[in-house]
Length: 244
Image (tube, rainbow, N blue to C red):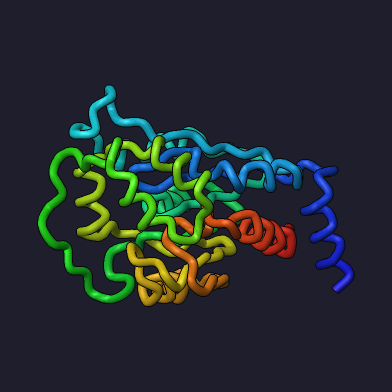
């Protein structure tokens, strides 16, 4: 108990460099999705990398899943304590990056799942070469963020971007992956309409992960709801308890 409390004190004091946390965003978003988490982690002594995934030569239609994965690998340090956080699409990118690079922990936030994990998918119609999300109706953002305040909704609405249809189709078809070999946490929201809770629970079982469940929270709620900093603090405490 004393060692756990000491770890929590370090995690919240900001007095000790903890390592690097690479935060990988979801489809149609950007590193800005973690703007509410970043100061919480930095105050606790973490270096935060929350870059934007960029299309190949500026063309989403020519961008594949592997192109995004290569970018994540370039962001991932080769030494020190390294944590990968992935939300939605970023989750499967974190899982794949953890197969290749040495990482100390993986945090999956309402993550998409690998092939064969969770209830059978209904892929629906193929996504066109470019998924058009930029400059969409404000109501779409309002509907997607029912647990966020007005300021955050307007801030996110102006920042959504288009996305690669090929990447989306690959994820829908299922990407082969192996469970992370390091401690893993799944952050799940019960009101997620993009990645149903049953799929998140199946992912946690597959990864032998710890689970934090947030009742009534939306798909983007862990990162951008009025409780986002609470979720970030909970993740910090989980990491502190698993520091080697």
